[in-house]
Length: 164
Image 1 (cartoon, rainbow, N blue to C red):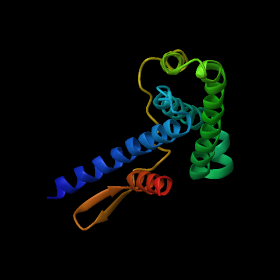
Image 2: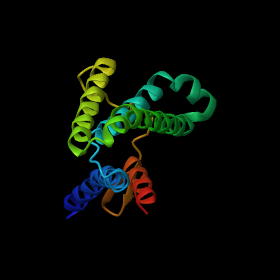
Image 3: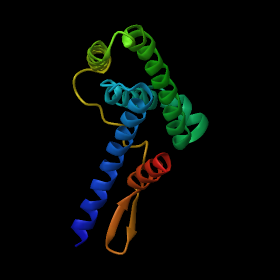
């Protein structure tokens, strides 16, 4: 039973990421009436920006603000960067051809997605990058025989706050 509950928690944690991405897709479609194929790629780009800020900017920020301050600063800067990137994509790839019709806008969205994916591969390489383990200590919270990590608690709390 313990393993089933822990796997249920793992699924809930991963599912909360998927729910946030789906919520973003839904919001963009509701406003623009366009499926933004670059949405998931912008999410990945934000992850890589956060990773870079934590790895290379962590010395100054961590000394000044501590580990949690560095993580919050990286999240805020990455969110601002992705907001700017999303605005640029909308202005460059979508707005000029949005009035032409749906199909050119969809092709443009696919093109933006491919450009972002290849930009990530050029900047960070084709291999996945792992966040530094010292950023979020692997603190285990024990609830009876049930174990949950601090990272899972943070992910679930932030996801539920953003969805609620």
